[in-house]
Image (cartoon, rainbow, N blue to C red; front, side, top):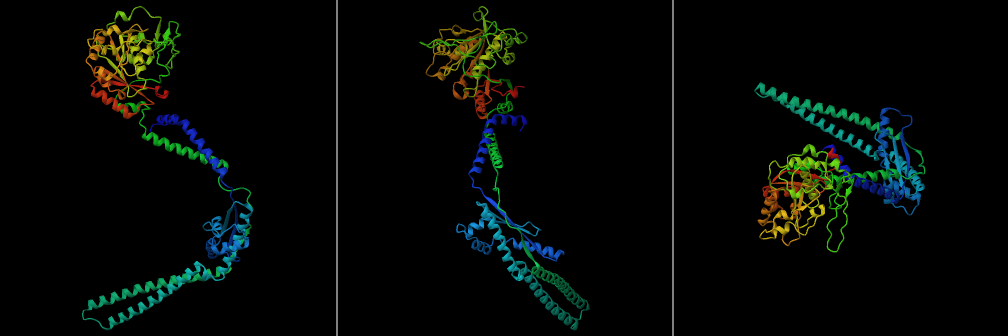
Amino acid sequence: MEMHHVLQILKQWRMRILLACLIGAAAGLTVNLLQPKVYQAEATLFVSSPNHSDINTLLGNQEAAKALASFPQSDAVLRATLQVVGDKSLTLPKLATMVSVQNDRGTQFVVVHVRDNLPERAAFLATEIAKQSIAQFQMMLSDPNRTLLGQDLQQQVTQLATEIKSAENEIQQQDQQLMAIEGQPVADATEQKARVDQQTARLDRLNLTLSGLRSAYSQLYSEQISYFDSSNNTQVTLLQDAQIPDNSVGLGRTLAIAMGLLAGLVAIVGVIVLVEQNDDTLRTPAKVVEASALPLLLMVERFQTATRSLVLLDSSSHHVHVEAPAAPGEHATPVESEMQTASVGEEETMKLAPLLVKQPVLVQNHLSNGTPKARYLLHEEFLTLGVFLHPEQAQVGPLLVTSPEHGDGKSLVAAQIALALARLGVAVVLVDANLRNPTVHERFGLTNKVGLSTLLTDQQLTTPARDLLQKTHEPLLAVLTAGPAIAAPAEALASPALATIMEQISAHAYVVIDSPAVLNASEVAIIASRSERALMVVAAQQTSAAKLKRAMETLTLAEVSVPGIILNRVEKEYLR
């Protein structure tokens, strides 16, 4: 995963990450405050052998300390401690859970830990358990054979003695067999020699084994004697009584908050990984290209969708509100801007036009009567796209603008493309083919009393399509609105009338069709089949790869050419 993508994910999830960390920190603090305080006291025991400093004595003391470490948690020591303490609230199982022992390897120290919610009792118990452990251990040392180590040494010595006796008997038997072989030789001298050599080799092996056993017995016996001697000289000392602890153990408040914060961070990272792995939302340009297998023709930062009207600029670069047609009985109200760069002046939006304009196709006089006092705001990026879409011949088929789902910004993109082509000198008719949810008339402040639906329901096509075109503030741009709602829009669009209407308009202007979303209306495939090219508008924060692929399959079945994708709502980082 690229670092740019990682940073993008972090930016997208930043508020959730912050919230998860705050919740984790609060949870850690709450747990710390609700937990009962526990105090730990400790008493240290030291195992030594006065007046002995050789290495064997040191090793013996370390082994003795290891044996001593098992005493503080033994039932005998705990019962004796309970009798001395006399606390009825303490039971043997409860006391056992309060005691722990530490004996680091290779040391002569044994540390007894006692945890309790009462600091004074914790100190008293630790001291008393240490004293009882010393008493029990010294009692055991008075009889070294009672220790595990002493018993183990004695067993090993006894076992070696038995093995030595068995080896000696085996050698005696094999020696007698050798004498018998030598006393009763066979006629074949070679065979006789082989018999003697074989028996001699067997005796040699047995003698070697016996020698090893005797050596091991001697060494082990010496260790046993040394252990018995060191046990008789071993002393256990309580270095210091346990002190009453001042502070409770466990996580401190700061550490509890830090661990809670870390737990919240780990949890949200897990959620992010899970969501990102299963989320196929097309948030980056690379994902769109991969899902569609088409180039990106244009990336747009964002169109606001609070309103549906385009912004007009007058000759002094001030805003002019377009009043949407009012319903009967209502007053027309001015509509606010819906594009982020609504404060840009006409001069800035038009500065590329002289460089990009081509020779216009047929321009209808009724579309260019006079110079308007105001023009629509146009994003410069669409002028560049207009150059790409500019028709090379006088008559070309319609351009369909669609998207996988509602809310992708398709209608605004269609309006901007139509404006860009008009600015480049092309006579354009923007057709609103979204009969279910028309918006083009609202964007340009036009009436929707007549339109495409009027023509589709006219069985005889007595009204020419051009008669229903409505002028706009753009000299070369006219609009064929959707018209009144009809009962079966898909059936109406499937009629031969749609092809006739498109042919009539295309004969005199370049047609841009604002169609419904592919996955929300079945008639898109019908409209696409009447178009020459189609552009797919994708919302970076909304459209999924699966939905885009399904929409592209629909256009493929309609046999319409799709030159590329327009990506809407792109993060600023991808536009640099």
